[in-house]
Length: 327
Image 1 (cartoon, helix red, strand yellow):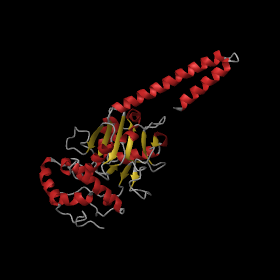
Image 2: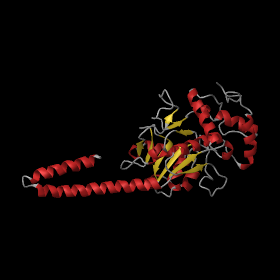
Image 3: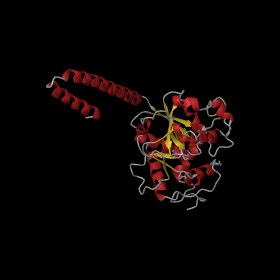
Image 4: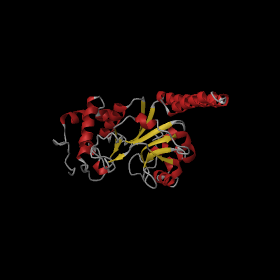
């Protein structure tokens, strides 16, 4: 029984008692009005939930092109769909050689990653309607995205993210696309400006009234203070240090064997939490077994050779650590 039901039942009791003293008609009229309000509130809530249960969760993933991070893409898509109770549509936001593409023709000279500013394109790609959920490709989903997708925006808020004050993080973020229209330049303008990402991060840092924190830990940074990564409070796990991302141990030797280079030019190292590495390895094995194979996220020309390489374990030692990765 909801609180509204309890209140209505209490008012009905008052009416019955009051009727014995000749004032029941007035109270009964108020009770009828309350019941009407109660029905309207419940009907609106049910309509909103039915609408959200019928529409797919629109997920936009910022990722490197050409399968450079294929291992992390396999784990991400698998973990999204493993927990999903709603239909999910995934858009891979990766650079394109086609300038007419929404992901082609960007000035990336000031970007830290190959996808840094793509998140700001989500509202326009959604036609400035409904919601859009953005995440970087290096996250691991550990809960049903429907829980995040259905969170309410407080009045005046346009984006849900992690943090507060000057430390909002948009590597996982839920956008009210219609409300964002007044706060973003068009994609065509963002493409020309290499500083788009930095400029918009600064704008929203200075516009606290527009940003709302998640209900729940939908962006757990490297496990934070949790002793166990299986803690149900962790909804999405994010690795924040590029040299320590667990998929690099597998991506680098794969690319090297193919005569290719990764976009990250620093020196890789093992993540400081062994359980992060173990979790990634377990989920990648699950993903492969479920059909989310690494080669599925590669350009067609690379798929056959990579499948043979993975089957033979080439370039990896018994701990899945390629040469050149520090322990």
